[in-house]
Image (cartoon, rainbow, N blue to C red; front, top):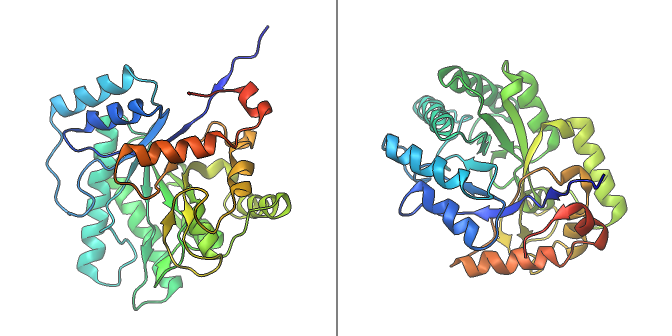
Amino acid sequence: MTKKKRRLLFGAHMSIAGGLDQAIFRGESIGCTTIQIFTKSNRQWAAKKLTTVDIENFKTAQKESDISPVVAHSSYLINLGSPKKDISKKSTKALAIELQRCEELGIPYLVLHPGSCLASSEEKCIEQIAQNLDKALALAPGKTMVLLETMAGQGSIIGYTFEQIAEIIKLTSNKKRVGACLDTCHVFAAGYEFDSKKKYKAMWDNFDATIGLKKLKAIHINDSEKACGTRVDRHADIGKGKISLEAFKLLFNDPRFFDIPKLLETPKESLTDDQRNINTIKKLLTPSTKKDLLVEK
């Protein structure tokens, strides 16, 4: 019996301009098999309620496409760790609303920047993030998981070490609904090197021992403008930053991650930019990987 090939789960963040369903069509047009979206404006607190038509159009478009899963990203305004009580409360409510929107749309994962401690300590901030995460999950029951994104560590941002992500998960009550999203630019900027077989293995062994590979549900694929350990968050096109192509070759040919959504967040002015980065990655796939995966041309 011939072994059934798995799909190359690879895509990019897509705009929802004109309707949520339009993100599906945009992703399809450049051969994405998974995409990431915002379910609302990422720069505003408020959001119009999803209509029945919104939901039906999105679900129909996805069902009729080859894109699955769709991953959502939460608003950049949300800061569960803010020492300002009004922002902390507002952020918790906003996260709950985004979780509910994901439930309505059938989106399994919602990526979240853990938060920023500002004037408080990192320890106190981590505790508060976990507490507010539990509150948001309680306000929005369902199956959608919150994926804590690994961060670069710029400013007072939390989540720039695997230990910080692991500690937040440890302190939460609803661990089944909390996972992780690794961002290649962020971890590199935070000081994790993975551009040789030895360093690559060491990083993932560290991740597995600290957070657990079973918690990894998505990977953001970005090169870094800045050098390793600078803790400066600047995304770059694949092969045009400080991360070597060897690092991405190791990642995309690693069978452990074949079934995990891998999503570009590289700079772009049009879909042509996404297509170029997708093509750069596909050239890194080995004959062995291509034999095991269905790869869109």
